[in-house]
Length: 284
Image 1 (tube, rainbow, N blue to C red):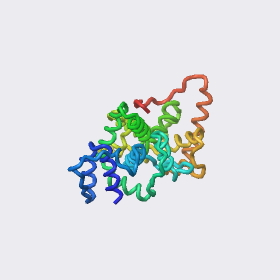
Image 2: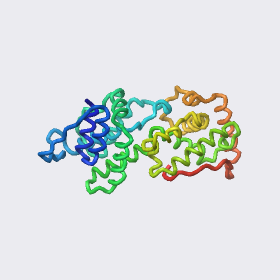
Image 3: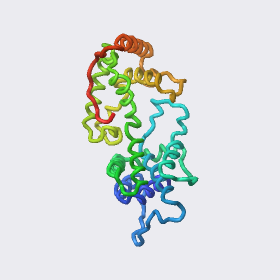
């Protein structure tokens, strides 16, 4: 079973993942048996060299997380995202082997759903954050790459886009009366994210009781406006979708707020734009 394969690979490279991985696997009815009599050094296994093993390990780590959010962000060639990350991993680690990955999207989703428990994700993230200066340069490079890739990914990209296009620019949209309730919700969510030990991984580590903060319907119009603004500067988006439709916002309202944004920003191009102040989050 693929979950057993992924769990085994994670534990083979980092034995410290064993308890969390076994718990996750036991939760779906899988029991792994680890060899105890012989200590096998994974880098000595002849079928794969060390760089190939680390590439597969890195891919298995990413499988535990919802790195992409294809429901809210529609990019060109997004179906190639796993292939692109594997190529990036191979480049980072100097791997030239032809590896039998990635899995198909259905299998990736199944693995993430069944194996990607909060406990295992927390264990993995703690490992990554503590190994930036690992004496093995390949492991150090891998951990830095994985940490960067996971930062503000998945559902967290919603807030990085809003922060980049509305908060940092002090957009007049934030002060508009029609979105006051949404801005209140956004402020509450930003405070919750900012209070977390690792704000960039909030969606992966937050408790079940905090998941409501990530519901985009709480600030659907703000997100649609921010997404439309981001599309102005980012050509990687698929041009066939409507930003308002992604979050079920009112197309008319989004259009009016966009017009207001550009109008005021142009008027205040030489002076500081005033707008509602929201909490800042470190690292975003």
